[in-house]
Amino acid sequence: GSVKATNGTDFQLPPLISSRCTPPSHPETTGDPDAEAYYINKNVQWYQAHGGNYTALVKRDTETVGGMTLDLPENPPPIPAKSTAPSSDSGEVVTATAAQIKELTNYAGVAATAYCRSVVPGTKWDCKQCLKYVPDGKLIKTFTSLLSDTNGFVLRSDAQKTIYVTFRGTN
Image (cartoon, rainbow, N blue to C red; front, side, top):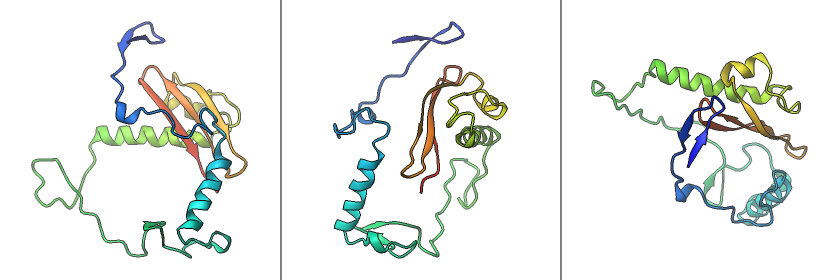
């Protein structure tokens, strides 16, 4: 349907992509933004069931569990670059355009705001750095977890027609 932006203009939201918009399949944590302890326990159980030794876990102690690689190997093979530029025939180098650099710099800036104390735990979108990247940002939800030291927020920008889900660090 039509949505009214904060500047008063109407815009159409794109249709939902049903394969990306399914309700949570775990009703025990539906709607609980602090359901982390449940999933930590569930992941530990899976890890141990697939041969991992959680009690003696040391970084790089185990490289794969259940057929999944936990970390990159020491000397991973290079991944060949692919270019959509018609002039590129070697496919060895990809050069970002000015627009791509601007867009990715913006995303990096928004990601960096997860470290802003004004945002988490302060629940305010008012610092100079935050406003630089999303001037009309409206915080929807901030979250902090003591178990894994995960902190983050959900932010809406009507001008950018974007919802950001951003977090910092885990232990």
